[in-house]
Length: 72
Image 1 (cartoon, rainbow, N blue to C red):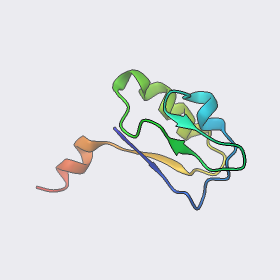
Image 2: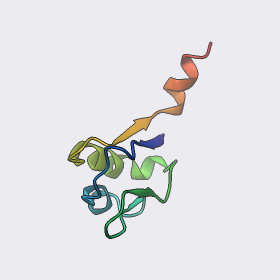
Image 3: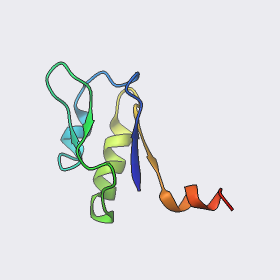
């Protein structure tokens, strides 16, 4: 799993940080910073919640396995 952020959409609400503080940080008056761009499966539920609740839909997951399948 790899996290992708669209910095043009992020408005710094901080919901992602609330849901997955081990993966995201949002500085005051800033946009999201991904502290762990390839978190393990133990963080998947928290990351999915952060993505689901992001008010601007600035976050997404790119599964490495599904990306690799398209390169055959």
